[in-house]
Length: 290
Length: 269
Image (cartoon, rainbow over all chains, first blue to last red; front, side, top):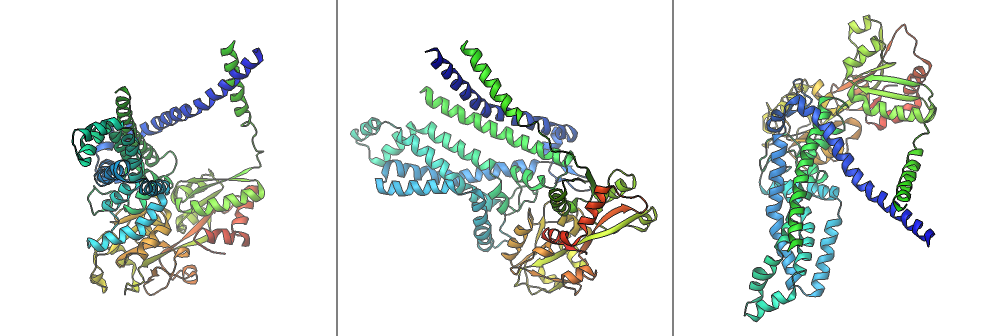
């Protein structure tokens, strides 16, 4: 009996360690980012850093203003949400409430497949098809632009939005809908007056999740956005927070102000993502309490 | 009791993780190099291969050509790296430059572009935004799409150096790899870009610069001007340490040729 107990305790200990590894990683990354991100902000000045409109990290007189990156990330993500959420939302309503089993199976499989495509593939397809297409359709000299990034991001966040929305729509008790039908409502009225409001915090969580995915994406965006530190405009070449870090990291020399400033950008991005996560938690918690 | 056992297990496991970190490889001497950031790729590849063969570690400090040269002068490193020829005053101070390789940069356009030749000045004007339409230089009526590399890239540094457009370039796209530049130029008939000569493919057209084509031969004899030498800088009358001499000999040996050309530059020897 005693022996058994020791064994149990050992197993619990192992689980505890495995759990601590995850927590440890988060703590380590947070501390590391803060430590390596603060010096450059101190040197450049918080206001100059966050609201400076010019980024020229390797010029003779370097400038480190990341406002173009922040605005690009916000515009790009909002654009992706504006395009992606309606498509994803209606797809989810259709799959959860209207579609028959066979259609739903096929469509859900393809949504899952879409989620599994690596971002570099999205980027490649965007670079070879979307960018030239934008150039031809809108008659601009070059298609690599904020618009291209928005479209790629909108497609990338679709699976997240669809899957989470379906889960929350499926969780709406059938009795609610039956009651609505019994009162003489049509099925469209039932979906939008009963099912969707009942699932709204889940759907909100889906949107926030989409925002998180869009703002953190680097690879695909880097391949279609052009990466010039311009202030954002739809047909201009732009640089996101993520791509600002990844495009210059390889060549910046360790310890230089440029490298430190890249860490500071990462810190800003990290804070953005933390805020998004906090919002997500808020929605999920509210959902649970109900 | 339960808690103590749990704690002990945790500690034991942590210890076993840490135990793996104590073995350090034996030091066999090292070579310090210092200088041009553009040479990081070539020195990195050579250093890695050399280390694998001999066990001597090669350190590389990316400080810039000027800083590398003064580091050699002051004896702070074994071999200095410069991506330009030594100036007369530097030679007078007792430094010797050995050309390791030539970095040729091809100016590429879409294959359908009727332009076949540009001179250095025109290239500079295109990149600084003085010339914005191909029709201004005898091409079709289309806005020139200027493609370049990200800040800090050796190719960008070299290109802007040679065309004297440092910090003045107005790019439409800044891409992070040679491959991306080539793909982008290949898919846009109004684009112009630059890339290492070695990596240019048939999907794009490398224009002649002042009538000279970017061939290996023209780069070596200096007639193709969008190029610069990668120079190893040493002191004339100070002997290199044994390991540094070994690395030096290795770099200019026949064996290193392939490693050097794999990094996209033309070996000098």
